[in-house]
Length: 124
Image (cartoon, rainbow, N blue to C red; front, top):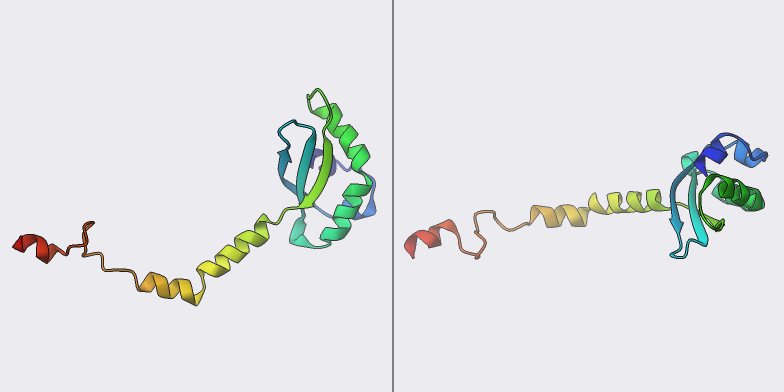
């Protein structure tokens, strides 16, 4: 799919004006449905890019069928890849004051695995 979009086979002003990455394709277990995750460069105009891809879905499916060796050409659907947003959300959580506080209040490393300090082992 990325190759088809890169080569400019789809003549659509929205698709031609955006660099679109295809980070992931998920196939259904029966290989009849391919969910293609896309992300326009910079994350801008996501809805217009999805609409353009949907307009050309029939053509794109035909191109995929010619290039992929499967018994049946899978039906395709497009979704915006939100992994970048999720990664940013996790990054913000890790930088939060609550996490910093929890990391700073970790128990002393002088305690061994059984919960005894080094001093207690010597007296036993």
